[in-house]
Length: 470
Ligand SMILES: Cc1cc2nc3c(=O)[nH]c(=O)nc-3n(C[C@H](O)[C@H](O)[C@H](O)COP(=O)(O)OP(=O)(O)OC[C@H]3O[C@@H](n4cnc5c(N)ncnc54)[C@H](O)[C@@H]3O)c2cc1C
Image (tube, rainbow, N blue to C red; front, side):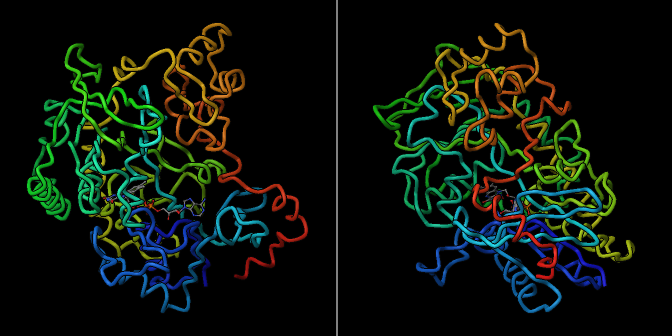
């Protein structure tokens, strides 16, 4: 019986696990979260349960079906609070994980080997910096969404939602549903870009009909709550004394440069911003998987990566939303278990349709270079190490060093606690780094997550491959 190891229990990982078990494999799923579901399906804290947990979610019955199946099926073992933090590839892949509450001392060390590996580690949201974005009260839209769905907490009373992409719509809905007044959703893309992304070959969108229904629901919700949706606009500054008190919104040109004289200031205590998503690539990079110029894990039509025995599914292979993640997970899990390709024709077709959806999102909402025009000398780029825009560019110019590595070492941008997860792509873009070169990508992190020194020190005795029989 094949053993398939899936990392990530979001929509892609859960579907992969079920598909692999259906194809006859024994499956282990690791997820660092406290429960399965990933970024999409979140849970209220156990001490605050609700009979209406499905509220603010889409496709909850699908989640319940997947959860029930993984709990009931003796061949699937879902290990939560399991942080995969490294992969060793000498003599086959060994995945190292620490089991226990995140950041707790003395977590149990686990080293796992399997016949096939499926990466389904998802993505986190990307936020472009702007003056004042480091003030308390400015949130990534993903964080605001996580607090709304997972805690039923509204991040503010009067909130502005801004950035780019369809994700802004569910965030605004969750905010109003948890009690915020959303003053507006400000989408940076302008009408021509949206037309370029969404209008060609409209019949292909029919296969994404579920997303269409979801979109109609958001629009109806926003109309009901009188939430304005404005195109070609961005928050170019957040201001306040110690925390956000107002947001400055400006119109943008096609390149996302602010148009002088169009600034509008609104009083707000929360600003929620997202400019798309960036995949969590540490583990696939450590395993030697090829990363494409679009910086997603390169996969073929079968979700197979460039490394033998390794598959990838969900948002680490492209931002196509939950339907893409589900279809890709099914393909990856089934084939990783050695299943026959003829059994997954519908999933492969859905996967192709979702790839089209991902291309449209990028064409319509992808980041344009003019955004740097809203930056100022003192705008913080790396929040962990407090490196400002002027200092970053000045140091890069003064040292005449083009490589990201030397810019990081001289300025410390990207070397703080988040290890460039927040600022890495921005620093690359601002310094003209070429992320396809190993030294120039901020995604290469040999340790995929912060690990306590005590846990590392204890590994030689505790991290025994025999424990792989979890
Ligand atoms: C904060 C946030 C909120 C979102 N909310 C919505 C929403 O409301 N609506 C919507 O349409 N889309 C939302 N998205 C987009 C959404 O994530 C995807 O459409 C969908 O969840 C992708 O599924 P996935 O399985 O690829 O990844 P995810 O759902 O992200 O699942 C990946 C899983 O991998 C786990 N993981 C990652 N690295 C490791 C590791 N090293 N060790 C162990 N486990 C690991 C994570 O804990 C996570 O559970 C959100 C994205 C983010 C970042």
